Length: 180
Ligand SMILES: Cc1cc2nc3c(=O)[nH]c(=O)nc-3n(C[C@H](O)[C@H](O)[C@H](O)COP(=O)(O)O)c2cc1C
Image 1 (cartoon, protein in one colour):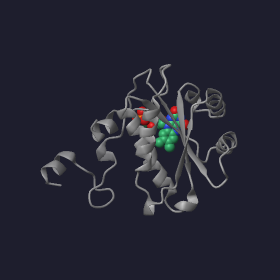
Image 2 (image 1 turned 45 degrees about the vertical axis):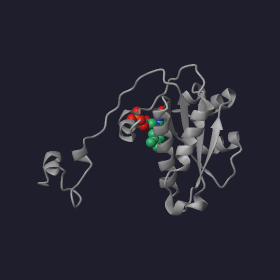
Image 3 (image 1 turned 180 degrees about the horizontal axis):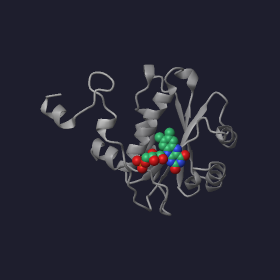
């Protein structure tokens, strides 16, 4: 699948079929994460594959916006080691997460990024999963075959792009024709 097509068509999926995810697909998602860019190639990440239903249910029970972890056959917990990339770990790990979401989509899987970092239950995730103190729990990602279709919206390009300096509005047609 073309990368741009995956970027446009991927949506957050929160309902899943009762169908296991092939281990190769999980590994492919993590391989995609491994090849994400990171500052100084610091690779400040670690991933925990959680399949155990009782653990997923425990995590779901403490996260008010992560109830779908109980129903996705796989949850990937994304950790960051800030010591490895003190300034940029959030950026580094964000790139790895997006690689996972896009690869999952290209493999026919649904996924959802569930924020954990800075929430009151980050410590609880660490306790349940035996995560050493030095790590931050950035997010959980659900993975499973989608049981629904979703749409989403984005603000127009003109509202989020300036030309040459802040506030000079993009005019798409002028830009395309080289006038802007
Ligand atoms: C940092 C971050 C945290 C998010 N946390 C949650 C969450 O806790 N629960 C959830 O269901 N979705 C979560 N999402 C998914 C967003 O709600 C979703 O990406 C957004 O609404 C756009 O929809 P789309 O992904 O289908 O395009 C999160 C996304 C990001 C990037």
